[in-house]
Amino acid sequence: MKPMLNIALPKGRLGEKVYAMFEKAGFGCPSILEESRKLIFENAEAGVRYFWVKPSDVAIYVERGAADIGVAGKDILLEYTPDVYELLDLKLGKCSMCVAAKKGFSDDRNRTLTVATKFTNIAKAHYAAEGRDIDIIHLNGSIEIAPILGLSDVIVDIVETGTTLKENDLEVVERFVPISARLIANKSGFKFKTERIEQLRKSLAKLVEEI
Ligand code: PRP
Image 1 (cartoon, rainbow, N blue to C red):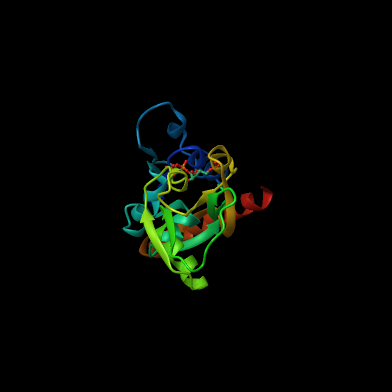
Image 2: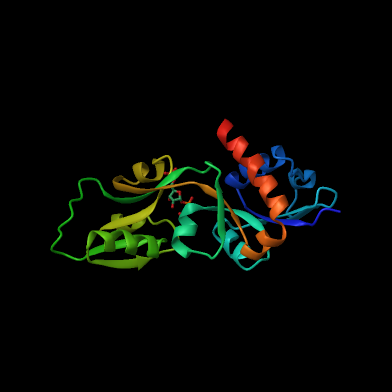
């Protein structure tokens, strides 16, 4: 019997693409494709168990060892700096971390800039590197509303297609970090299951080259 590999996948469209890659890499679990509200799926023969978790929670499951490996966005890894190994860039879910503002916004550097974001640590580090004084407003979602209602001057958020900004009359001021999905591993899980995890990483790396 192969040792069971516990894998946390981000629920949603990205997770489905990621699962398709894992399946091609030889780590399939057919029951995951059945319509259901279940969150845990196992293929005992292949020695894999998958969990669907909220994308921003994947790194927590992996860091604490509830999952051996998982797939998390680089945005989450930069924001929360979990103590995990980052094994591979899957080149899926590509987007950018951006500063955005109302069209025509110009920054008065004599004033403190108010920044609304879900990514407090990323935003602080970005402006600290520029030596810019900011006042951070932490929001949990729908960040684009903040500059429209005058809650903040700018937002720091991920932009994928740019549609959300466009439809809310906002524009990108600066793109500063490229983001994509990363394969991550729990540090002790990696030690005990190195061979299987490395086998998966190598197969996925080949598939990434083909994208
Ligand atoms: C993310 C992000 C933007 C949007 C960008 O939001 O926060 O709002 O996607 O995508 P686009 O450039 O393709 O329009 P998410 O869907 O995660 O929802 P949220 O409002 O909860 O942040």
